[in-house]
Length: 139
Image (cartoon, rainbow, N blue to C red; front, top):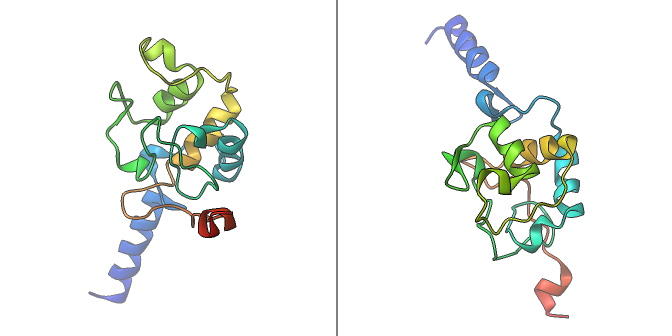
């Protein structure tokens, strides 16, 4: 492949992804770093295993590993930013029988959480998972 053609192909691929997030999963106004903190603040790891979030090893809800590769959220709505943000904010409005609690997540926090979850793509597990000393030693 010619250098110019290779460069054009790389630019095209790079424009389709930003920080490892596919274009269809970009969340307007969302910030993944704030999302990680919001996941901790709302206690999401009490129910879900979430790669990269310290202590998030819950087994009540599904693990959120490879979240961006999923087609549906909660088996009900397409895995797209607007639907995910709505699910995070008001899960009972989408599925009145869900075990997911309504935690009073703000719009801003829901966008940030969605941005974080979309970093958990098909080909990677997300940021390194921090293992606590207690998990290693049992103390």
